[in-house]
Image (cartoon, rainbow, N blue to C red; front, side):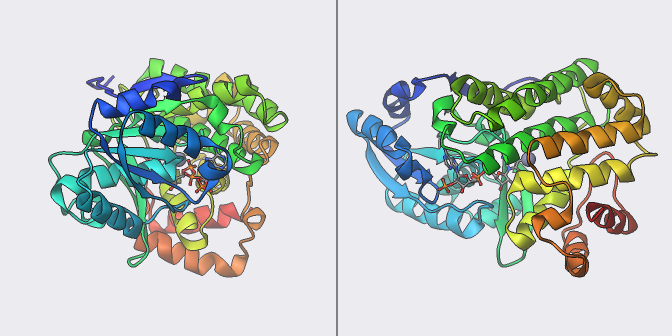
Length: 380
Ligand code: NZQ
Ligand code: ZN
């Protein structure tokens, strides 16, 4: 087992009605608030009203930056920074899914320093401080509500990359599962695929961390047990709660401690599909994971078999990969490129952008021929 420090400073407020404390919590950090949200779901489902009532009740002055798109872009982060600096905001409130929260994380780093979002993402700028960030999560998937990561894309350079910095752990995250009741069936499913993928990325990292392995199994088993049930019963609060908590624990450190790192090769591959075709993150992973597992048959055979034994009670690599394909299919997630409406003629563009972005895993390295093989395998 590797050495590690556990320090996760995010206060997680979980359960029905928790945002009743939002106004009071925000004003502990300041009354000048930058409220960041997405393209309108929070206006349709009433969350915007609940949040703004809390802020008004606490006497906050609010600058709003709406319109963050799924697969968020650095231009929006830069524009939100300009607004926040003009309005002297003291605290940032992100209300939405991973795209909104990730944007807010980089904004929280950029406001004090004035650095460009992409310079922060690429580590050209090294901010030393961040504004406090509070989040209200509306979609169970990424785990960003309790971690130090953000993923943004640069439309100009055609890159989508991840960034990690302990300064961007949210100070508080409010998770009311009832806020996810309005997430449509497809995005609910992609969120479940994403949380499974996070547990797997950690499982395939280097190092001997047997307890973290067991947390991986537990998180995936939760998704196996309650994911399909939720897709048949989208208004079920208890099922929403189980999936929401599983998603947080898939990527808040619990499945990673004691390893050298995770792998994250599949996420790198998936990000390129999102970048090229603006696809939902989880839908790219359910296609990329089976292909990656097939390429890794030899190199990671023992680990794949161990997963199969613990999750599906099967004995071979082949049976394990088939069980994952069945699981993603049961979750109504795509497992082949054609289900994403991507044809063989697009292969060249995909491989070229993957090579340009130098997609790779941290544990299982991917050569250029590996990338070509994985893309072939994504087509089946
Ligand atoms: O924009 P609005 O109108 O809010 O609609 C969103 C969006 O269209 C909608 N939505 C969110 N909450 C809803 C809702 N619709 C109805 N009811 C609600 N309660 O869902 C759509 C998708 O939202 P998005 O935030 O893009 O989804 P997700 O949470 O899956 O985030 C995906 C982004 O997170 C990154 C991904 O790469 C992607 O850019 N990731 C971030 C990670 C991290 N920071 O740790 C790790 C992940 O692996 C991932 O890479
Ligand atoms: Zn993910």
